[in-house]
Length: 436
Ligand code: GUN
Ligand code: ZN
Image (cartoon, rainbow, N blue to C red):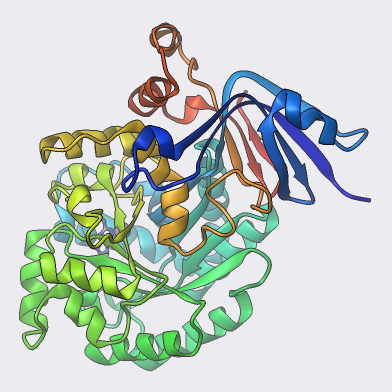
């Protein structure tokens, strides 16, 4: 017996990269569309009238009139253990880590706490329409165990890893180069490729890892091309100065990671605000990804990511969108896009709504080299979807009335939307969230 389901509504997805081609042409829009799902995958998508004859007999059709059916959002950089310390007052990066982050992460030696926060985090993500994320755990292997166990229960496609940190951190949050390697290898062997779970080797950032630890991280990655790597890069000017001091022989912050063999496809570098042209060229050549984290960068006063430099079609770098909770202020990628638009404005660029939604879906999937599985609505893709309500509040309903194009409707969603805009979320064809 096959498991089938169909969703009817206004379908929005991408046929092309809107940073390379005309944004409106890259966007595919089906005014009254039907998405047929079979055994967790999209079997067919098209205009309702044309697609209805292909509906297997007895298939339930869920109709979302006036809602948009989109691929689920992809969050390319987020810390689940920091959920309880979102909105911590007053500091910039290095003091914020000392004062708020490290004490919060210390609690994850307790597996019960880790399971509790992992469960709440995944629930919040799905409430925001995000179906895939690249997730930092803590230095404790049990924090990873808890996260993957909860994710496996939901069947969400998640990337996560144990934080590696053998210096410049409180003693209870430090591992050793060899201990971090051994714990990571055991977790990787257990979880990577188990169902939809994938492992990321996760050195926190250059200042908290010895050269030896970074090299062992490279050795872990050299064992398996399909494993991910995630870390932070050039987020804050004091951090960049510290890295220059700690690694005087390296040309740049990025070069610290490149030297250890960490800059490669499936490597995700958070922030990358204070980077230069040779760094961006290295990113382009290597196939690594940058995670643009707008709400976090504004919250911590870190600076402005130059999105349109990174996306320069002459040497495009893969870029995804990250919420970076707890430095970020919302798990909603609609909120990330709101701030991304303003950061682009402030740097002299217009972030078109098609470009914005591409970054949050297909572009994020491409950044992670997962675009053959998620990020678009097309036959064969895994059925991770979110249902967007452009009229979730009275004000949004008023604004939606004056929308004369799908682009304008998407723009109103990204500027005014949040978790309330998510009518429902589907993971591998199963409904995992429905708005009350
Ligand atoms: N750099 C090193 N660790 C962190 C972290 O937890 N959050 C952010 N935003 N930057 C970091
Ligand atoms: Zn981060």
